[in-house]
Image (cartoon, rainbow, N blue to C red; front, side, top):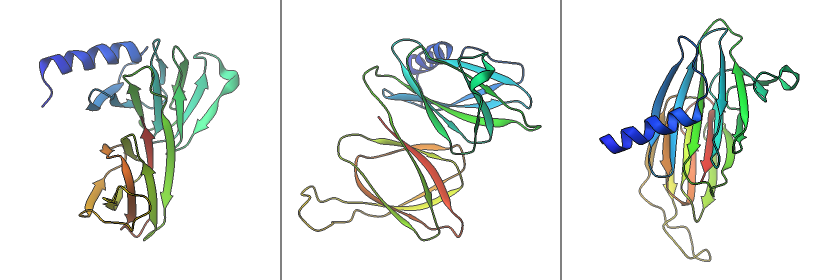
Length: 206
């Protein structure tokens, strides 16, 4: 449950982060805590969306659907196509424009990092059916952002001594739809794709 103070903080953070909202634009807060505010922006067909971080913040974007991205909003010379699962960082006070050139709405995830000192580490994964990813972060938790449907079995190593054999936690089933987010605890994890199709996701370590 988000209390009144948290809700006010979300509104302030959103006002600072998002510079322009064309008609039909939708912004939904997916997660908000002391580390980050994660929002999904739904950009209407043929619409343009500008974003600018405010000093001294950092931010990360993840495309859920195809979009055109233009650095230095309004300048067309650096246009790039952002495919589903593509990511990027926004440094403090940087501007970026996204254009949805399709005839359908497109989704964009924005991770607004609360602590100015936190430099995010972004990793994209694409697991074949049955494939296992071994991932580790001793110090920091990670945001997991689904860019495809996910059905993952997560087992964490409970053994703190690196020289000792793996000691498995109780397995956790992770089921997510594209665009959903959740935290993954710090430590060594084994993530197994239980689907018959590739599992695609992005992690952001803060």
